[in-house]
Length: 110
Length: 267
Image (cartoon, rainbow over the protein chains, first blue to last red):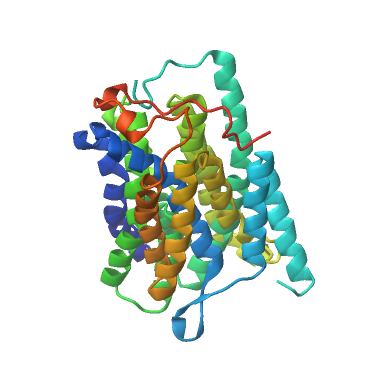
């Protein structure tokens, strides 16, 4: 069985782990000024929302170029976000999003 | 009081918060399992052996870059290009670690070093919501979210995908490809409990789309993650429960994230 790509995994780890570890381990990150702490408070909603939007609204078009895509994926994710805002229930939101996407695709409209 | 330095909640509060964490984890587990299988299939289709696919999931443990690498290996790219792109794609973890750092500063360096390896989009989101809910850095909650919610499902599913993926139906047909972005959106909504957080989230979306369309979706995520909070900081805070930046004590050791009861993601 081939194991050559284990080396690639180790190199990928070498460039991934520092980003995960340095802010947790470096003393400088433990004495951040209040404005930096406030900034970091806002990173969570910003980056998570950015990931969600990027995943469902930016698709790969002809020639590999990114294109705007508004489909059932965006509708399902919006429905999930709205349900979480309304009911404070992530599981319910995910369930509705999954059912909406699967149903739309089964009906040929996704 | 700084994040993570607040008084430990009483046992019943801790149990209740962990139950909510478990409930929040359900969708994440489904997502990790679904996409772990897809990754196993993708890796196999691009020439990875089961050992190589598992090495990727255990050692790298960063789904987007793993998919990227599998595709690039299959397309014949050199390792240097794959490693450079991996570094760029995973640079967002810097933000997550920096945001969690003040919460986890009481933990030993060894434990923090281990915590770093299992820090992902999902474990960050789950644990930050859990910590804020409690006003306390619950280390067991972190490990539960990171290991139970993501690491184990992702790796077991990778193994299932690379060994026996032929019998697994297309996750798209089951709508499972929606779980990851929907979970990210739902968790973002759970964190957006005041004007600044909402502004940061909305700006993150707008910036991610514009930059993503102009260059690359991954660059869009990084730009949204870095610049969204800047937009949030420009918005005056009106929530009396949360101190203004200027009202925060100069000594970060006396800063705390308020313990909110209204950001719950479970009933």
